[in-house]
Amino acid sequence: MSPLDSSGRSKTRVDPRWTLVACVLASSLSFVEGSVLSVALPAIRGSYGAGTQEVQWVVNAYLLPLSALLLLGGALGDHFGRKRLLLIGTSIFALTSLVCALAPSLPLLLAARAAQGVGAALLLPNSLALLNAAFQGEKRGRAVGIWAAAGAAAAAIAPLIGGWLVGTVGWPAIFYINLPLALGAIIIASRFVEESSEAGAGRTDYPGALLATLGLGGLTYALTLWSATRSFTGEAAIALAIGIVTFAAFLWAEKKRGLRAMMPLSLFANRCFSGLNLLTFLLYGAFGAAMLLIPYVLISSGGYSPVQAGLAMLPLPILMTSISPTMGSLAARLGPRIPLSVGPMIVAAGMVLAVLVTPSGSYWTGAFPMILVMAVGMTIAVAPLTSSVLASVEEQHVAMASGFNSAVARTGGLIATALLGAVLSSKGDELFAGFHGAMFVSAAVAAAGSLVALTMLGGVKMKKG
Image (cartoon, rainbow, N blue to C red; front, side, top):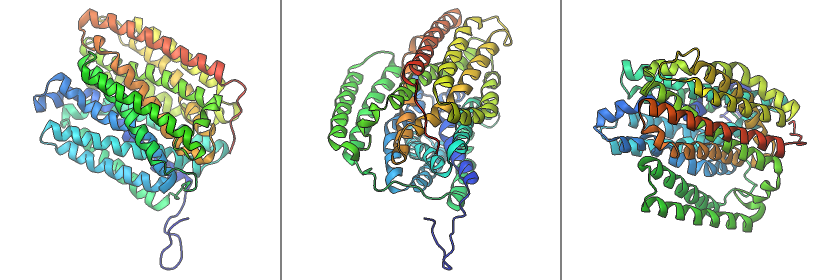
């Protein structure tokens, strides 16, 4: 129900179109922060006089709580209200962005980045769940397509904007740009978005939420340490053991709780839901590795400036912004199997084209074909994947499903990043050789995602409304 003023009229003028705008603005905060720092890290390192391993935590401090708390964010939205959690998460993100920009020391910056991750974990799954509640049928597919396209486009164009800001204004500006986005999302959501929740669905599974957070947190922390040190230390081993044990305890607790669980295990009896999340893990892991490596290689050994590297990635936001909405509604009519089989395979083909990228090669005969083909594949796959995950579960599980799927996507990207230490430490011709090898492996992983779609999504009919 919408809140009432003293005359008994609703203070909230519900409008699905404005709901879409608010959700896009809020979720773009998370997508942008996940990629913009790639071009700002050298400047941040120089500003604080930090070592390379220390400054890696500027990225990892954000990813750790984001990966670990997405499930809890979705569950809290289910129970207490998705609009409320969207507003809380966006407010946290805005406040901590200001702290990041003004941080006088690296420890304070890391603490603020971790708090940003908490805010993102609250706003991201609930923005998608609000869209699911505001639209029906093919309109829902198109809205989710716009949401997915806007997020992917924001993440792809962020390095270009970040590179320009770092070079002209300074690295704190990459955090200041979050403030107008957050303010716009808060104002629009407060006025035009209707509250949505499933308070009767047994979502107050706090033991499950705690165990899930500890389990994912332990696993993510172990991978973060591995990525930072490029060796499996005793601390990483302890974190991994804690993660495995607590995640096993989480599965036991969820099985015992049954349908009242935060993550009902019965959902995984749904072949479509299981397949979609496995596909998400594979595709986003492969794509995350590519998105880290391509700008890094172009800047480090290809002679590109940060702005030029951002410009090189422009085929991604252009294609995804223009075509993904159509793919979302098309998937609602055809089902997920065809686009989710074709898209990852095209992404894999684009990754194989990385062999064309050489130290002396031109952009148009090297990086451009690779990026363009990858962009086509992701454009085909992203919106159908997102909308199909939502459609594969009952209404009361939507926020949980979106949170779980987002956690799976980020875990895939984090694992991929953890495996790239040897490549990132190389230089010159050795860097290009490692880049080609890593992209071939990523291509195989993306192709495996296509195989998952072919074998696990066949015959599934997604619900329409």
